[in-house]
Length: 332
Ligand code: UDP
Ligand code: MG
Image (cartoon, protein in one colour):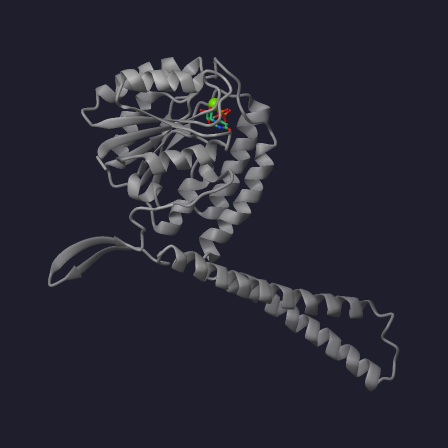
């Protein structure tokens, strides 16, 4: 497979008015970079003329790659497909609605060159409605930063630059694309952010509403789990399970003593309910933890993954760059 320096990945869902303008602006910036490049438009089941336009663009410009989904699978899936298709050593993601500015790309690349694996855009002066978009996003960014320990002002900004070996080794589903910088912590990526420009949406409509905020919160719980306990789920589940089991056993033993030694009736004691609940939940949590451990093993072993990643090995005083633990090419 022919490698290029740079792949730009753009999810497209009904952006027919934006596509030609975006292409022109992007082209101007990329031609000025003195790098080989490709522009990957992933058509996420558009119902307008977006795919026709992408096909036309790719006919007249060999730099344009089109990926056409059979239906609308969502922005995250589109990004994932873009990563898989990309042949670049560096992958840039951005929106197809002209809200991100291609002119920020050189700056992203410059910072990536300083030794980072991901450079994330920060829409410092964001041009979206305050109450429904900017404010919930501020709260979400604060929370995600606190919980994951990867501090960014703007997780929601699509304009980001990734080293390909990092991007291609991130597994993400659902609506997880905004969490990629946080997830990349699990493979030891160095992440930073820089302010980027942001424009109001002129053509087409935004595809999301306020309900996204709640989905993001649920995803955050999963991300936290994946980051801290992916390789040791029994620790968190079994740990709390053991505490409950102990409390339950204690309570029930106490009641047994009360019944046998004290000769008292225990059928009407609230403690009986608590004890039973603690005991059963304890067993539940521990067995869930054990099942999770088995699943974890299947996950790593079936894909030939390692629960660690080696950056380099030194042997006979020679340095071997290995990146071991990272699956080189995923064959789905
Ligand atoms: N998008 C997509 N699939 C979807 C929803 C959105 O590919 O199901 C694309 C959309 O065409 C745009 C980008 O994702 O290029 C961001 O979408 P949008 O501008 O609606 O999000 P917002 O900027 O309002 O957060
Ligand atoms: Mg947008």
